[in-house]
Length: 239
Image (tube, rainbow, N blue to C red; front, side, top):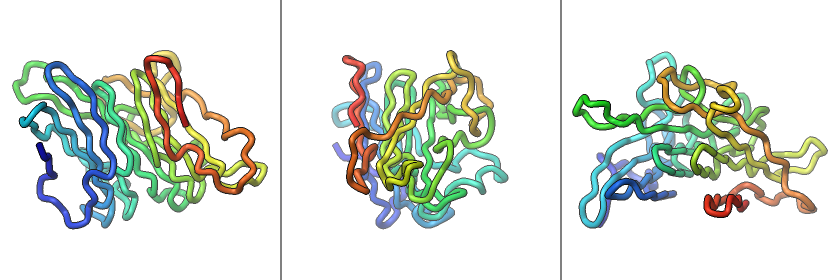
């Protein structure tokens, strides 16, 4: 069965990245469309579908600015940030990367975490809320963003852990683009992350640690962190 965007935008590249997870009695799929043009060209968006067999429905349409007050939304959805270049899904969590987001540095990148707030009896269905920080957009980024970091080029989530790749990370010693990753976990053991997020009382993510760059690299550009996979059964992270 084919699932499409609503009001498709020419050349938005729907399907650039996809993730799937089993939910009760069905499946959930998240799909990125990083070249979608909304307020700005190439800001990107992502979709969440649920169903099985030939029956699927869209349950969420996500973007970096959606659902925010106008004063906060204006700070998101940057031109060419390519939200939806990477997507990840586990249970009630969806993570979306925007690796070309402009900030204090060009193409420093960012990632966003969303959480399904299950229907509490209103008969309006579930809603999706931002699940990081204490106010604002919930944007995750490197602790010291640098030009062409491309934070969020790849993202993974499993249980209470989120990992974001930073393939353009440069070593302090001078080796360029050796790459790195940053990992997060829920705030129960560590406290809220030092970044913006929402005010709704749902599981929030806390900064866990910054992983070291790849060992024994001799070339100037390794793209370490550009792809990753977490295996929950063995507890292994492959980068």
